[in-house]
Length: 51
Image 1 (cartoon, helix red, strand yellow):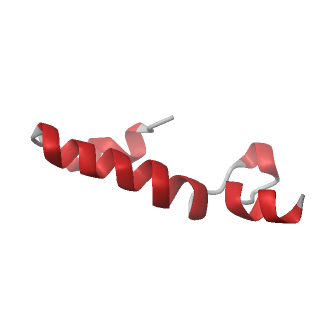
Image 2 (spheres, rainbow, N blue to C red):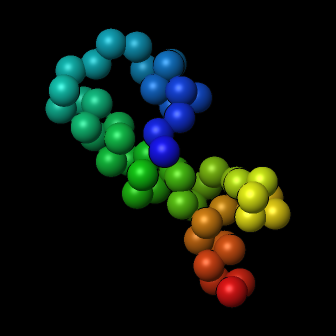
Image 3 (cartoon, rainbow, N blue to C red):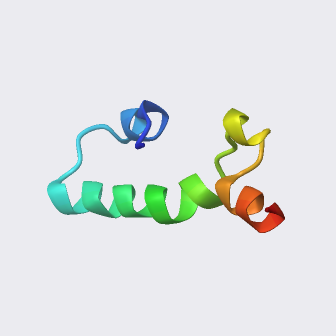
């Protein structure tokens, strides 16, 4: 699920820093911000609310 679009610009991070970034991506960015073409261009949260 974690995309290169998120991790590549981060460069080399320590284990704890990367864990924080992964947590942010999966809890905040992915479901609330990132749009998905499979969901008609909506975010997962928007799609779930519309269902």
